[in-house]
Length: 162
Image: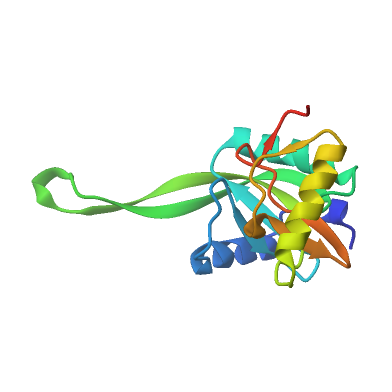
């Protein structure tokens, strides 16, 4: 299946919920949840961050600097919240609907050697193409095949071109 063909289905919703529950590594702006061997989902609590990241990932992908980006969507789910200020001192369990602003993205391998070399290479490549990569470190890079890529394009990482 091609990246642009991925859509939010009940199977993918289940994988996202399991990914949220099991994840212990959140980035500053988003959580990445793998869907299969080739594709994952980036989940953001703010629409602005999702839109910013998606725009930059698509722009930088045209330059060969990032994984491909797919369809944007909103992931809604009910989350249990205990309200301890209920009348008569009785705790009350309710469910709030949470929304995560999301998009599908190509997966990159983040476990490889020579990350310092990769950071220098990507940083220089971004500069040469007129982009500012403000958050260049080993947690923000990956490999697709034999090509190094920037995997973090949120507002902390990217800024307007020179």
